[in-house]
Amino acid sequence: MQKVLVIGGAGFIGSFIARALVERKIDVTIFDSFYQYLPKLVPDENKILAQENRFKDIEGKIKVIRGNAANYGEVRRAIEEQDPDCIIHLAGLPLANKSNIYIEESLEGVKATGCILQVIKDTGKKIKFIYTSSSTVYGDFVYQPADEDHPKNPRGVYAGVKLAGEHITSSFCRQFNISYVIIRPSGVYGPTDINERVVQKFIENAIEGKEIVVKDPTNMIDFTYVKDLAEGYALAVIKEEANNETFNITCGQGRTLGELAEIIKKHFPKTKLKIDEADKDLPRRGGLSIERAKKKLGYVPKYPLEKGIEEYIVYYKRNVRK
Image 1 (cartoon, rainbow, N blue to C red):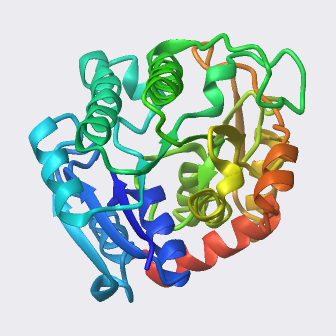
Image 2: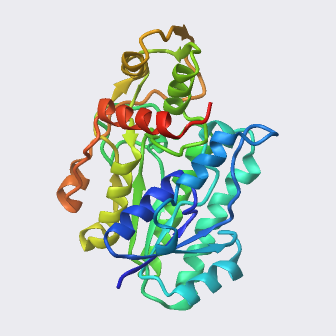
């Protein structure tokens, strides 16, 4: 049976990847510090519930190790004990806007990437390494759909850290003959997200009867439902064609913040929209090309924004405590 170690796997995205791998009968171990980026001093009951739901029904099908991805000894012990065929690296500060505030913590992501790769080299094991980057490495889109060769001009600490991790991954792995994959997600949303990304905030405000504040309704993002992203990771694990490649794993369609708000408003007709100025610290993005992932991985996203939002709202109505 194939074995995968998901570093940072207790988070929102990691939990869906773990589930997608378990469904393929792959042996999954999660390695995580279990540090959560909760913005309030008093824990939010619904956020705690979301964390509990992440591994519902698969608790007995995965192994869990608590550890720091930037600690050489802890990472090495996990790799030697679990003997994985593949490592998925998700560890790091997950929010772009927080990275510009907690710079030192954000830079730990670069250290963790180097640490994991160093352990793989030192153990001499044949392990595929999958690095989680971001579509923010492109900066302001010059053209769209943006393919993987689009110019890289990252804005902000988060995007810079992600691109640095890409360079470390590709150069290190080429030097020491380690198979690698780089994945660039975009606008990920879905059940159990607790980090207050835009889709989560819009839906929560609609459910609570609050207005939705749309910062520049023309701004476009390739919103990606988390189940589609998890499927892309699973394909990258099992497909040899993925080796030493970089992939956009997204929905493959740019949608504006105005469209997002209107889709949610259809489910909550009384919701009021407030138009505000754009966040000048964020890049101007758009749709991404997923042709490479389609061709080499057989990746086909199943959740356009309307379908993803509908399923996400069903989750909220079933799980959010009022």
